[in-house]
Amino acid sequence: MAEERKTVKLPETDNTSLTCAARILAHECADANLEFMRCKQRDANPRACLVQGEKVTAAVLKTLREVETHCGETYSAYKKALKKNWHRIDETRKEQAALEDCWRQYKGYNQTQEDK
Image (tube, rainbow, N blue to C red; front, top):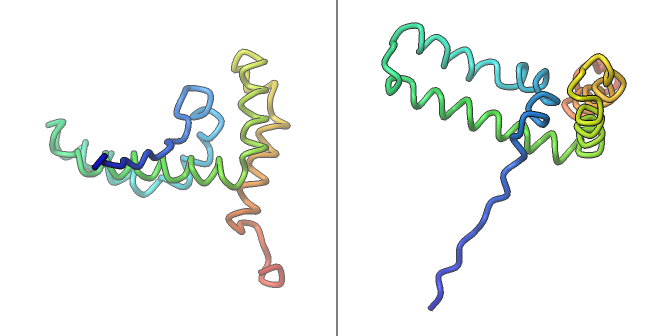
């Protein structure tokens, strides 16, 4: 009997995708990243912080999946604009703002108690 394998589609992790999601990743993955950096400060041995590094990777992949799922249209528009403008972020502020607004709305940030 043939063995069935599940394939999990990973989010895009190219330079453009990571640049577009950088501000979101900085906020959403801050705890895991800080834990990793503190570990690296305590121990220069690269193997000492593998667990913390895996947590950072997992947090980034989870966040990228959420961005692609819940803000895919604005995320794609931002990536397209960034590529078109040779990664000059100043030229893509409108698309960046649209993505960040979508993310804040999805996460419920900046809502008053009445909105919730």
